[in-house]
Length: 185
Image 1 (cartoon, rainbow, N blue to C red):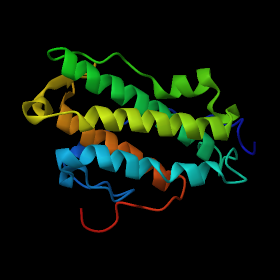
Image 2 (cartoon, rainbow, N blue to C red):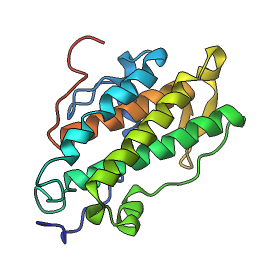
Image 3 (cartoon, rainbow, N blue to C red):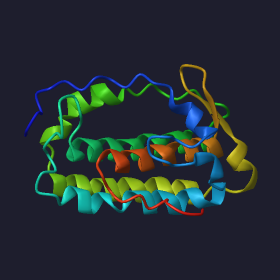
């Protein structure tokens, strides 16, 4: 698996700033996304993963301390699952606090680098469809419902959706996939 034995340094950055300005690394501008576009963009930003997962070198890490495309795909699958749960929680409860999710611990515990790319592709598509359906079902004032991360960061359903989309877009760039959000939105 290439450099798979090299540890990946945990990402401890707070990426909430991406709600206010374009990400210089991937070019995605979350602030420009209309709430009603979140569901469709979720599907659009997860479709390229099927091609990524078909690569011959999908399990190879491109360098020391960098996840392989397979590991990123597993992460995106799980991001869809986690954010789908958070949206449902925000719609069902008043100002819930989200359970903590350690993405790096999950990657190690679940053995991201050893998973079957075909299975990951199916699971990612299912998770993306489920979270897209959750966002598609949001109406009117529901977009303003709030939820909190354990660090105190507050989100509305709308801002959570835009934050989530940045994550999807950013990881496509991480694996050298096409940037489907280029151009006007």
